[in-house]
Every structure is written in structure tokens, then in C-alpha cells.
Amino acid sequence: MPPSFTQRVLKIVSHIPRGETMTYAQVAEAAGSLGAARAVGSVMKYNYDPTIPCHRVIRSDGKLGEYNRGASRKEELLREEGAL
Image 1 (cartoon, helix red, strand yellow):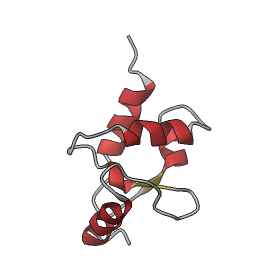
Image 2 (cartoon, one colour):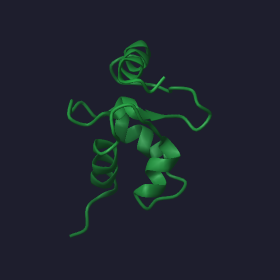
Image 3 (tube, helix red, strand yellow):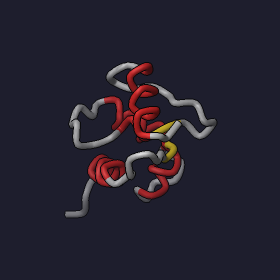
């Protein structure tokens, strides 16, 4: 059975290197679902696995977007990693 959209998204996000980001749209495209950026956001919203760096996924307009541990924590993590 092929991996689900959620599994593909989590795998892609787990490989975003420290200090780099991808947009929700880029993750959706890499997962084979062009136009599913909002669905990527939903997957990220419910990800509480600390090994999946969902804070590295940002909006296409350059804004950071939401984060299930708080927007300020997302910004803090990205600054610590040198992505901002």
C-alpha cells in the first residue's frame, strides 16, 4: 500500500535541514499534491512528534504562519537555527 498524504508530508518535513525552510505549497508539491498547501498545514497542526521539525514549514508570502506550540516559539526556533 502506498504511503498516505500525511505520511508523505511528515517524511518530507522530517528531512528539512536545520537552518532551512520550505513553504506549505512546496511541501504539498513534493508530496505529489500540488495545491494542497492547506492540507499540509492541517497535518502540521496535529503533529506533536518532536522529531518532525514542523516549525520549518512557512507560508508562501514569507510569514511564519501558525505553530501548534505557539507562533512565538516557532520564530524562536527558526532564529536559533539561523533560518531567520
